[in-house]
Length: 374
Image (cartoon, rainbow, N blue to C red; front, side, top):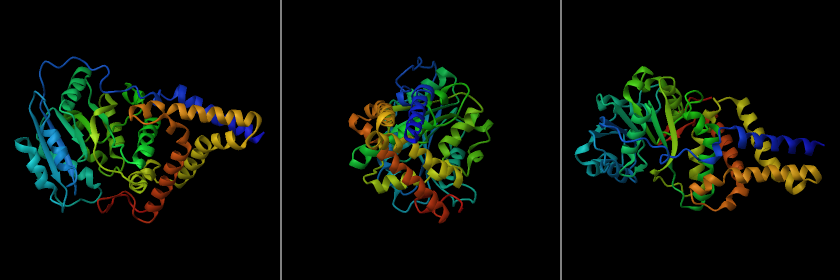
């Protein structure tokens, strides 16, 4: 009876996720869909790029920004956040006349490093209509900015954000990266983000925001200590205007995550922050992951009778739910049945994130522990 009850509960959860969680798994929100007509005039835009020790990728990224075919006034501000590897020099060589390099001042207490750098870039940007906040590992197609502004102007949006397509080359990336975006959409269904009411979120690699909306929201200082700064930013701006978030092929992360360890480091940087550094939420998350992802295959393999059938049905629903994301990343559908193992990896990363936080090493990035010690 216990097996049947667990099987029925897990199947009910998966049916809810498939049918009533904003269609998160369908991956329908794309920057190629529903794009309005081009605006009659093209407003001024300034891209703000925070960078710290990004010599491996910065030249490619800045060159992609400098090559934008945007018809309006467009400039790039790069904030060199104490780099020791020649990041600023490489950026200057790639950016040409459109680029201004700002040497960042030392980090101020109460800010994360990235947001402190972004705040300096915004101050140096002047008064354009739009600020394009993009990361130092995101390379853009030449029409990315034109597409962003077209959507923002045509829809009267305060924020347009694109979930950059992550690198998916190594075995670890092929196994784990599509699930990263899948889990993000499960937590923040894009359809609900894009609705006039509902949750707010964004993807930090590519965010076009109206400067006046950001100022009404209190500026970047309003989220200065946020470790998951993109979702905090999306929620902040949504209180002052409509926002839109979607998948894209135009913006691509070129940062390498060649090993499971490097992906674990990326996840554990902020996983415990997602749980508000609460031990009870951590415990609930681990129990929930076990129920949702581990119970179905265990029942399907080890159970019998109705419990086995319920477990198999839940496992099938799980495997089906990730197929659109696997297609987006051009990965084999056979990764679908492996989702329980992938979820176990993400659960372990969440535990690692909590452990790092308790050790005073939470939010570690480029030599900085950015989360307060628990």
